[in-house]
Image (cartoon, rainbow, N blue to C red; front, side, top):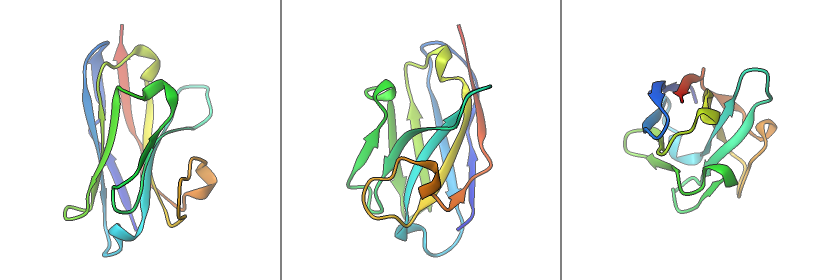
Length: 123
């Protein structure tokens, strides 16, 4: 599966953005997906995960209540709705796909990666 992430941009603190991850291929619904992010000078970190059917989601603590991951299997797209953005959310955001069953929060568990989209939150 090939992934393409888009929707990043510049937003003021407190604002919102919705990232999209479009997937090619007929096996979209077979995979679970996640969003990771990488801030300048830092390692890539897990943000959110959604199961293959969308029935289960999981978030890192510092985005809970602000970010929502979702998927539309009919459109082969995964979303990350980000609200109440903070300057510390500034990073390149990556979507990734895994065939691992159950929760997967580590980058090495994901075989397929999108190219990343930059989110910049100004104070």
